[in-house]
Image (cartoon, rainbow over all chains, first blue to last red; front, side, top):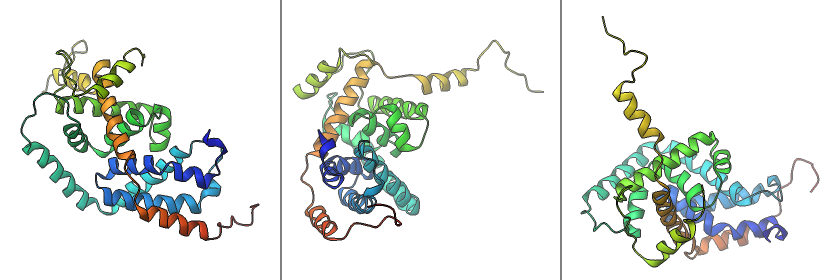
Length: 186
Length: 73
């Protein structure tokens, strides 16, 4: 499928996902675009280091996240302020009607610690295995599992999704996705 | 002197911490969360890419490929 593409062309095909990953990490599209741009340059100039046949998306995501954490360390104070603003804005929001709205979900997601957001996007949304995510993040598989559990648990608390009561779903696409997955074992 | 908690008893604080860190959300909750994560991700993924990426890629295509320390091309 994509294996036949030259690496430079395959790189372009991963840009939408790379940008989505960057947005989930930075929570800011302008910053995300800067990070993607840096990642494109780094990947392009190091394309000879990419091993054909391996997972280019994982390679690109790894370059981007390493760049993100490096920048974050440099601007730790500013990032802390941004975190505070987002948390406060969520707290001001009136209680929703119990239905799972996507915008509410996004706001809740944005309040999670960056490590949990990263893990949930990798294993929950992008389909990477726990092993792949652990390798990409440079941590143990148990750490990834723990981050995913804590992130999902926190989201369920913020969205008031109960373990006991019935879960209300907003729309058909969500119900369809959940229904299609309900037969799978984890 | 401070009394130690007997070996066969677990301190309530430890129980709380233990259960908090090891409790997995139910399968139903996990699926609902993941379905919404995928929606958030695919929504961002479907956005149009900024033009500056295209400009950058055009520039990169024009530049000669990097040499790799005398190794084969």
